[in-house]
Image 1 (tube, helix red, strand yellow):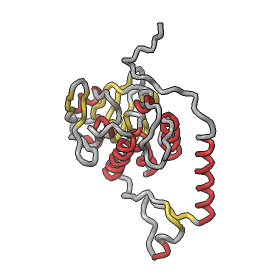
Image 2 (cartoon, helix red, strand yellow):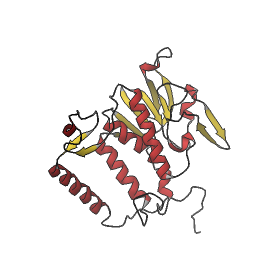
Image 3 (cartoon, one colour):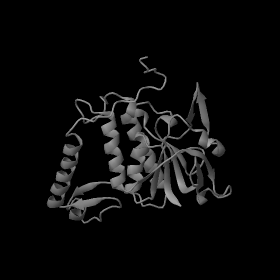
Image 4 (spheres, helix red, strand yellow):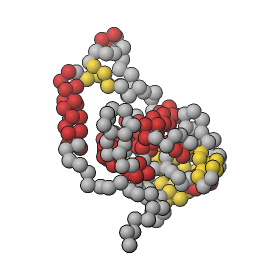
Length: 247
């Protein structure tokens, strides 16, 4: 029984997984394949990158960050999500997968686009607009079914990476607050920030001294240097409706 199962390994799902895993929740991301962001030739509007960056590199780094936080990944497609006990939603959910064994999770975050057929058994409140279906959520990403959340585009958020990342994080926090995990701030602060004022370090926070801060900074810079040392060979994925056959 996982604490959190996130369906979708795109920006919103990865952002949610970083928060839930750092909160100590057993987090599994079920990734159906390539994120739609991989179609971008260049990601130009993400804060912190003045000249933009390769979208595929961004996805690689975000996935690495989720793994470092403790999230695990499984490649596959979810075909249905149903409660383990109709009379007790705290019993969690069973996720049927295509060609794989069923999975169990106490909470589920839907972060896939544009497929949401697997949510039909739960009656979460899908809204059809054209050929797409969105999921009705509250301001924190909670659906009409306790323990089921939706993040990113599937929750009718704008189709922008920075928005997807922010909404995924927000939904991840909602799942944390609804779980048994202590409320936490997820701050790493200088030594003495709390204890120097006679306060205990809050749940999820950490005080580090100057030596540890410099060590983490060096590790972070090394990761970025290596990640951006060479251009990626991968090409953007073209929209499937485009005919690339030159013949």
